[in-house]
Length: 410
Image (tube, rainbow, N blue to C red; front, side, top):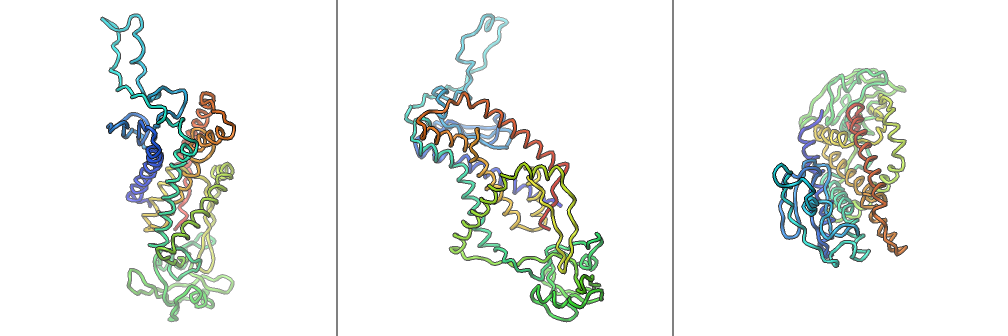
């Protein structure tokens, strides 16, 4: 089940991430005195815009990204916004144009004010250009650290110790319903007694089930603050009884100040894992195309195994976020937002045009070689990369629809 609220919150969070990314470029460019000509969310036709000072702000039709246009990013553009201006207003009418029966030119856009060389991006010191280019990804990293800190303080972090609270029920090896499922136990129920023996830890629960395999026993549990009881026939495995559920993990909240270094450490570990994951992207995509069926779980507590689904697209991520909210697993929802921000931040720093990392690499090249990169030669490469990214995006969306990754956080 997917929550419409979860999907809506995720889309809003995604739009906020895009806004902050472009805002990072915008703020640092303004800080260093560069002229920011346009600040837009989305791509395609303009839905709404306004001009304040020298910058035009607006929203476009397709909320799949955004852009911050800084004057002078290319030595081959004019003083103004050469990609955005209506260049038809500059040329003289050709023979047959205008007059009776001739085409009438559309009113030209407001002409761009020439930019002083000292305010153009390409004329700023290399370190300032590098900061502006990296600022977009930096905002994603800051958001990820703040969200991690919030989880540590408000929700807590897993200690690795299992509890007697049911995280999810799982079927038996043969695919039949488990004793917990037959008894109507569900996620969130906390088992407090087995056959009259009080249990407070998962270890005590296992001990209480040790000689109950195949026997009918009474289970006391707490649901919604009320103590209830049911009768189950414990399954038998290696002379031990088991109910067939995956236990929840014990969590530990961390203090406001103590969570700061902890959140940075967790962010760093996740970022390193993300970089390693990008290295295995192709094999992961192959696994996604040939995904096996998930194996049923077994064990004293349950414990199903969920396959590694490989890379997923925006549709799949949105669906997982919606399911997390539907299952009231807000920590998982926030974890998805953390992972998304880290992935986007790292991906944008890849040394490939038109990524921010590609132009950051050009700045480094200029500093090392004292030669400027001919961006006209880069255009075909950038166009090829954009084409591949579009194909990859469409392919992942197709996989998200036709072969969705099962929700792994039940």
